[in-house]
Image (cartoon, rainbow, N blue to C red):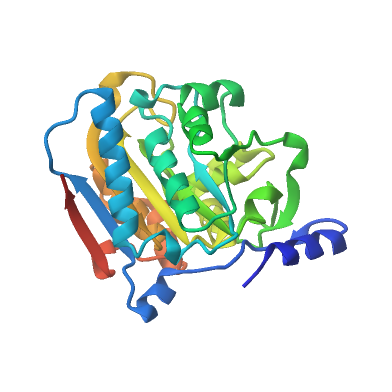
Length: 316
């Protein structure tokens, strides 16, 4: 298990790229041995929510139920931990446009982390649109600050070359403050994407937001690149926001005609399984999705999520 002290020691010793992996690695394989739940899917079955306050309450309840069924945030957060919550804040869009993670899902995770004893919760992403606009208009900045989280605008000068050790990504600039955290919670929104080799975006693709440099180059061969960054990040907890999903014109969207209410939040320790579910929610067969297939083949997770210890919840 790595610690922030290990990170600082490595940083002090490194003259160039750092051989660094994120901390306290966990996996679905470990949870199977422990008998814990690998994945939860919380679906709203109560009265239809149409007003903003109703949708907010729905998102909060789904998120809390999904985490609690997984074993609670105490399973992942220890007293004194620094947690980085990594939503998708890539675009200058409003929450109802479903291009960014639902701010109420993010706020609920912050609250649960503090309740579990976290010392500090930080929230940040490396947006495609200007950060000031994306952070504000997504609603995530205000929601996070209201829960006493530190909202971090990533400084382009602070990305540091790190050893990824992947099949395609050998070294790449990564934001050190993210990987030096005790826990990184990966919280994407489920979206269509216009890439042929990655026609959707969910947990694995959300890790592009920890990287700097010319990330657009990944798109030429994106499945192995996403698998490489996922293996580097060693995901311990991913939360899938499907309160609203973007069904077309992704990843940036813009039209409410492309937004569909699914009123679902899933959580788990198996990133491939959650991405497979995301594909299904978009009407895609996971077996046809190159990133899901390659992630499964490389041992990053299970493509057939129903093989896992799965808890499906009806929430009202």
